[in-house]
Length: 65
Image (cartoon, rainbow, N blue to C red; front, side):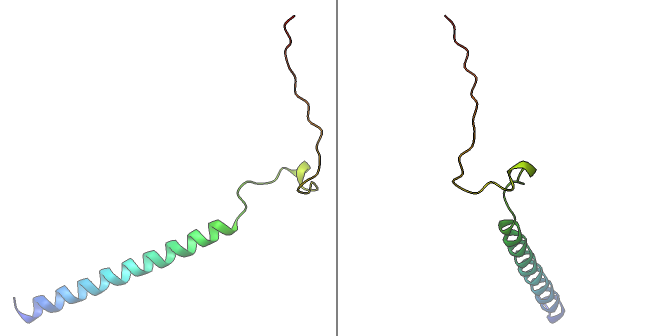
């Protein structure tokens, strides 16, 4: 191997290392942005409901007699 081949190898190694670091940095930032978002959108009628409020629930049961 001559000096030119080693130089080209070094440049390619540095560029791949830099691209990998940039990709990991971008994906970490994207993950942190996704974590900050709410999991599900809240239905417009449920916006005023606080945690622990009692809700009226109707469950229809079929009774065979």
